Amino acid sequence: MEAVKAILERAKSGADLSETEGVVLLRQKEPEAIAEICQTADDLRQKQAGDTVTYVINRNINFTNICEQHCSFCAFRRDEGEEGAFWLNTSQILEKTADAVRRNATEICMQGGLNPKAKLNGASLPYYLRLVQAIKAEYPQLHLHAFSPQEVQFIAREDGISYEDVIISLRDAGVGSMPGTAAEVFSDRVRRVICPEKIDTATWLEIVSIAHRMGVPTTSTMLCGHIETPEDAIAHLQKLRSLQQNAIENGYPAKITEFILLPFVGQEAPKPLRNRVGRDQPILEDTLLLTAVARIFLGNWIVNHQPSWVKLGLEGATEALKCGCNDIGGTLMEEHITTMAGAQGGTCMEVETLQKAIQSIDRSYQQRSTLYEYL
Ligand SMILES: C[S@@+](CC[C@H](N)C(=O)[O-])C[C@H]1O[C@@H](n2cnc3c(N)ncnc32)[C@H](O)[C@@H]1O
Ligand SMILES: Nc1c(NC[C@H](O)[C@H](O)[C@H](O)CO)[nH]c(=O)[nH]c1=O
Ligand SMILES: N[C@@H](Cc1ccc(O)cc1)C(=O)O
Ligand code: SF4
Image (tube, rainbow, N blue to C red; front, side, top):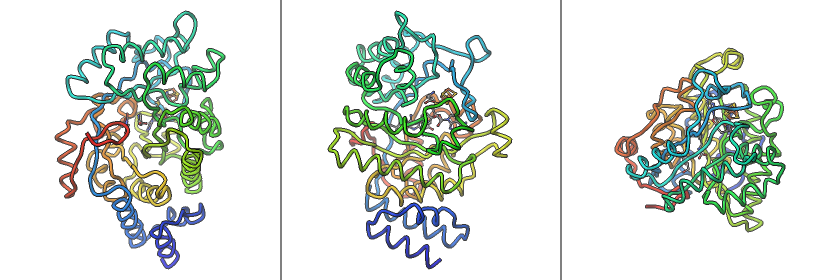
């Protein structure tokens, strides 16, 4: 307990914790120590981000779930022709966008499977650019938060072009920011088990750094609660922190806007990983401790922290607002990826429901843009 208190004092004084210190915090089992860690995270949240909790009105559009990869946590992907496979055409996407705009969305969050047939004139990039242009032509004011580093690498590989060229083209067509998914856990040992076909740690960091250099802000995520160790989790946070330090120190025009913890949902995930992890739903207590440690460890470098109501339920996400989070996330309108994995939180939130959850813990709420401007 004395060791924990000393570490928390250092964090409160504004110091960046070492990985060893982070691991000590994450390994705590005593309720008293855990309560102190959450209290420190809550204090730092107040100091760094204030008492107002933000939300964004957005819609997820997953344009296809046909994917050439086979991540062992993913219940969303399908082979072409398999039951449940889908691939939206432009008019379906525009209908969903029109409905989102009618419901006051400011953001479309677009991601999909890696579909080698998604090409125009034999190339992937023009296909993705057409998705972007179709939306931006009709709704130039909408913010497009689209395509993970894995999707960027897929396009570059299919077309034999550089990551930089892909990112510049997407940016110039109207992509406003990049979701920091596909990060999973930055341990190549773990990645060989849970996502052996995915980009490795170094490539994820490289692509996100290029995005920052090219003026494209990104989010950042971590998939937790599967086979990662506390050391893996802290190493992941350390890599995000130093990526952000690098963007700031080099004066890049963009950086990481937020950190989102994504607890693994196993219920409908492929059986090998589901069985190895041994549970269907995330353990709330473990998620909350990691939420708090992430706030403390990322320090002043990443000030916006968001829980996932999809995965924790709105009640669990509201608890996370007391353990370091200052944002409740998006309305989403239709969530598929983790809902297909058996997540219990729902697929859509009304603005009023998010506001009530925030009010229930005596905090004020505020609508934000994707880039955290108050609206
Ligand atoms: C499904 S992918 C979509 C974009 C693209 N296919 C990719 O992998 O980057 C988005 C993210 O969803 C998350 N996800 C997928 N299955 C999940 C599950 N069963 N539980 C929690 N998160 C999951 C992963 O973190 C993954 O990177
Ligand atoms: N937590 C989840 C999110 N969060 C992302 C936000 O909705 C938003 O796009 C971001 O904060 C940028 O403004 N998105 C999901 O699709 N699923 C989640 O579980
Ligand atoms: N789109 C979110 C993150 C996200 C997306 C899909 C998920 O299933 C989970 C998380 C972001 O980076 O901003
Ligand atoms: S997580 Fe993404 S890349 Fe992996 S199988 Fe699912 S859709 Fe494909």
